Amino acid sequence: MQNAHVDLDLRAGATAMEDSMHKFGAVLVVLGALGVAACETPQQKITNKEDMLSAAGFKILPVNTPSRQAALKQLPPNKFSREIRDGRVFYVYPDPVVCGCLYVGDQNAYGRFRANVFAKNLADEQAMTANEMSMDWGPWGGYPMGWYY
Image (cartoon, one colour):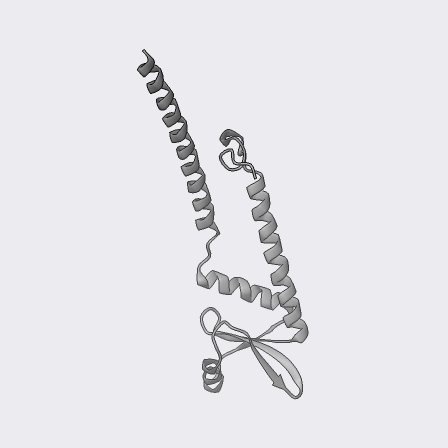
């Protein structure tokens, strides 16, 4: 009779552990799906960056002559370069992939671009935090799985 009592206690503990593991697995699946949905292709990332460049005041110069094509190949693709012309600082961003063009902006445009990137990153982080905070951890005994810090 005592052995039956021990078996029930072990079985109850195993069932609770299995339930916790299933719930934890479900949380991982949801988080994984959100992570995949948040992923962007490299081309999408470049396009988003270029939209922000245009919004910040960068001018688009088409690469439509052989000399411009040769000059574009000398610059690192999809990276900023700092150029000084007639004592003025310019930032150039070559895009050989999406538009086949060169974005050119002064220090003010570059400053606006950096501020816009910061604001976007902050908004993305706040949205992610709000999403995490809205999750109902109650069935797991609190955040996460009953662990209180």
